[in-house]
Every structure is written in structure tokens, then in C-alpha cells.
Image (cartoon, rainbow, N blue to C red; front, side, top):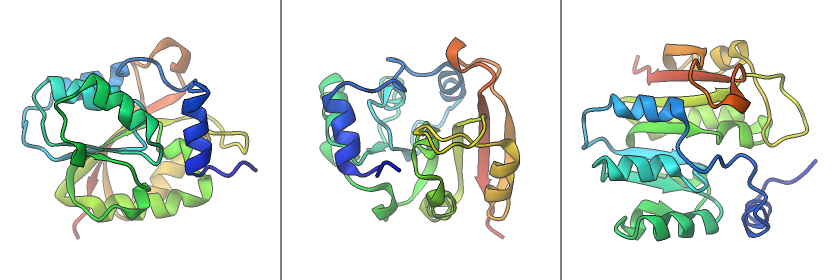
Length: 196
């Protein structure tokens, strides 16, 4: 099995082998962001890659956006496109080493790029990183879990089992506005931190 470490991801960017990169913000996330009104939200995008979502948020006036990626190159790419974004908001580190808190975390291909053995750790870390009324929103792949990723698949049943103990499942449904190659293979979700 491939070791998905810093060197692996850096090599992907150096060789331009970024098949997951659609070159723009995905339609479901654009639609979700378009209905956000609080520009003061502290937002995290983990495993963000070239992070067109961060760029879109920034240009819409959300200036409290943080991007974390284990690879340096995608953060450099984002900084070139957004020279005004403060360097301290571009975090070149392992997601699991973060010690901050956020109002909203946007999920776009990060979860399914992690080794499946890290999924429980991911759910726990998400809970820890969110403020009292925080939420995770984004997309999860909906196809059979495999060992040939990334991306690794997953199912609605698995996600419910994984997140229900610590999150209120506000939305988990097939994404109606996915880009054509991903139609029928993505679930749009909003999970709210359960503070009980």
C-alpha cells in the first residue's frame, strides 16, 4: 500500500499528477458558500490542495480563512493567486497537528484522500477543532470503499456511523449539482457539532 505522507503529496504536485483538481471551485461548494452571510466566520479548509474554495471565499469578503496542507506547493500556488492573504493563514503542516478552533470547516476531497484507517481520528479531530456551534460542510465520495485510492470511497451508512456519535447530521444527501464526472458519486453534507 502506498504511504500517503508529505513526500507522496509533494511529488504529486511536482509531477502535476493532480487528477482530483478541477481547476475551480466545485458547484456544490460554491452554492453553499453563496448562502453564507457572516463574513466574520473563522473557516478552515483542510488538505486543501490548490484551494479554489479559499480563493472564492476570500474574493467574497471572507478574510478569516485558513488553509492547511501537508504539501508546500499548493499553498505557494494559492499565495500567487491571492497575494493579500496573510502567510499565517496558510498552514504547511499535518491536519492532525492543528490546535486552533474554527466556526466552519469545509471538506473537499480531503477525507477520502486519507488512509481509511484514519477516519475515526479525522472525526475526533474535526470535533476538537470546532467552536461551540461549529459545523463541517462539504462533499464526501459515495462509491465503494477500496484500497486503490486515493481517493478512497465510502458510503452514507459508514458516514452516519462515524459522525453520529459527536455530530448532529443536518444534511447528508446525494449532491444534485456535482460536476459531470462526479454526478451520482458525491454526497453533500452539513454536520453540526453536538455539544451534549
